[in-house]
Length: 158
Image (cartoon, rainbow, N blue to C red):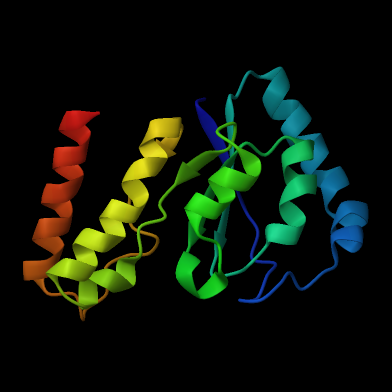
């Protein structure tokens, strides 16, 4: 097994719904049991997936417990920009996603900017660029196609 993913919808747009102390006391022991099992079975990547919540205050205890990857949906509304997470937690944390899917509903310039913001994360490694949400029905094909072309160009350069 190459990875395991955890899903934790425990935060609103502004903060976790449980304090870091409560989370450490009640949730982290369970995480540690599962993560220890994954480590014994040599599962190298343990990803926390979450949707639209700012769980920055919980990340130190999750990382200490052994979470080493993040895949956060709807990052813009939650204030969970990946460049900030990379600066704070370093390249040891793998990142998946982080490209604002809402940009695809705007225009070609917004699509280009959203992808361009993610590109520097590739330099640190351990980053898989993709949308932070699925494309919605308001995304024209004329915006989605350039997004895919940009990702293809990035892949060829990497």
